[in-house]
Amino acid sequence: MSTRTTAARSLAAALAVLFVLSGCTSPDKSPRAADSSPAGTAAPPAPGGTGGGYEGPRPQDQNLLAWTGDPNDAGHVTAQSAAGVGGRVTLVRVVLRQEITWSNIWLGLAGLDQGARLSDCYLGVYDATGTLRAATPDISPQLMTDPVAKPLALAKPFTAAPGTYFIALLLNGNWATNALTLKSTGAGISVNAGLTPPNLRYSTILTGQSSLPPTVNLAEQSTSTINTGWGSQWYGIS
Image (cartoon, rainbow, N blue to C red; front, side, top):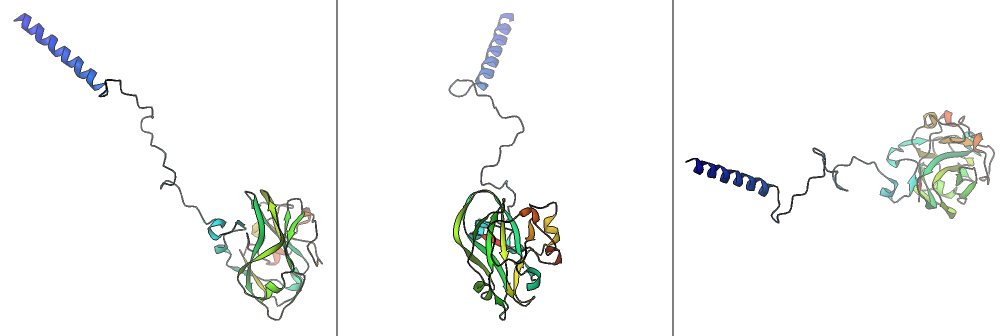
């Protein structure tokens, strides 16, 4: 009886060992690979999945290369008298994050003055050194027609490296203050929060200009006209 009991116990032990070994091996008898992922760590979301947050509109969504802000936010209409801004160079800063070929400046023309007498009106681009990189021909005719967002071509496109630029607007002539109007963010004084010359986001410089000078001293940026309500114009780049 003792012999039978001992044999039965030996058989049970052997079966138990066999069961354990079969659980630790794969069907091809090789040991199972250990899971290298930390316990409880979720796999990262796949690219293009639903794990990302909302991203706002980009210039490329509207076939532009850059802009001073989403045009959907440029709902304000800004106007100034000829005495207030005539002959002054108005600057709006834009920061490019990648190299582009800059061919056009888009301006949001909001309202027309059919009785205006305009001349020597220009758009241009200054770089961070105050050097004029490109300018349009006289845009006076385009300011008399079609109050929409419109591209105004530079006389010669240029390659703009990443960096800081200033879009320059020069108006001359006579017009009714509340008739000739431009699309704007409505920001005047507040647009320059935290900034000082030569890096103001919105400013004027010089007086008595009939063309855009080849260089400007950005350290002379002024906010005196800005503070009277000359809201920051919207511009696009293509």
